[in-house]
Amino acid sequence: MGMGGGHGAEDPITDINVTPLVDICLVLVIIFMVTVPIMMTSSPIEVKLPRAETMESREDVNVTVAINPTDSVAVDSKLCTIMQLPEFMKEAVDAKGTDKMLIIKADKDVNHDRVLLIMDIAKKLGCTRISVSTTQQKQ
Image (cartoon, rainbow, N blue to C red; front, side):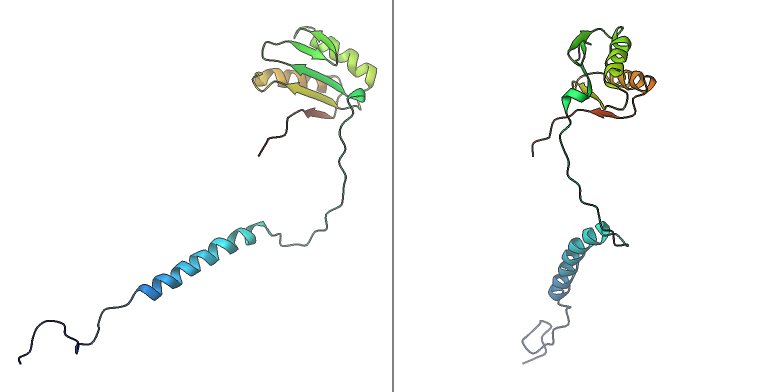
């Protein structure tokens, strides 16, 4: 029996077994994936947040401006045009006071400049509280 060049049962294994290395790397990746988002959201200082209850706004004390994509405008329940908007808003704000909230109900397809126009008029009239009405997104 001569010396063969092939690997037999008596030859030592000289290859590196990478399976345990891959297992350890995968476990470390999973650990980092779980812990990094937790570390990113925690604050370095402890803060005790105040408790608050929210309440729905009352429509009878607010000034509401509604606008649709065809530039039809309503201030509270009165229809007007874009050109008449400043005087209708002035009447509504004067009747209810500038400390009341102005609610803008704009259709999702209304041009952005129309909403900015309403906000600009409200600012000139002295309104300090402006809200844009939205619907709750379904999940």
